[in-house]
Amino acid sequence: MQGRFIFQCLVLSSIFIIALVMEIAPWPVGFQSFKPAWIVLVFTYWALSIPHKVSIGWAFIIGIIWDMVLGSTLGVHALVMSMFAYVITAVHLILRNMSLWMQSLLIVALVFAIRLSIFFIEFLLHSATFNWQEIFGSLASGVLWPWVFLLLRKVRRQLNLGE
Image 1 (spheres, rainbow, N blue to C red):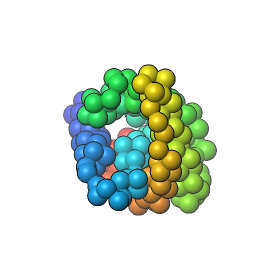
Image 2 (cartoon, rainbow, N blue to C red):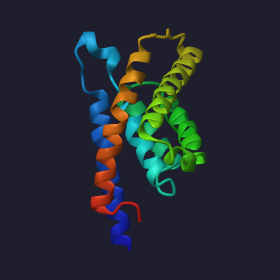
Image 3 (cartoon, helix red, strand yellow):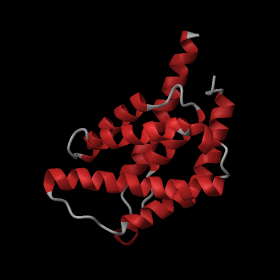
Image 4 (cartoon, rainbow, N blue to C red):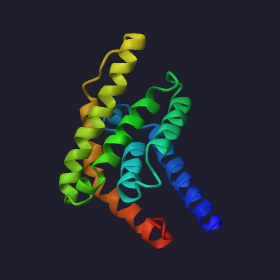
């Protein structure tokens, strides 16, 4: 039982590390605004599929690591990811029963809300300016959601991570 728990934590950590690497990977200048929110997509899948294991605590840890990697103010991403995790886990039964295209539309709205929340906190701390091209990244996240969902579901089923 203990070995199974450690295995599940290692697999989830590895998947989040891959998402973090994809999040910070450089994109060409012209396509920078189309960069999807990989961490949010991966976290959303795991919060929907196993909310009893991946919830606010994981979101806070991922947010702190995300802050350290980006060099932003420590706790900004952690706060926003924790709030996002609360919302997702509170309504996970409703979201699970929606079709993939409906989930994609919600992902667009949620990713934009996360980016807007991060901007708002940064604005209060540092007088940041908002880049309206963040909408394109939210749209890209919504377009990629079905593929991310199906890929991670296959990984979860093959490795029996839901138990």
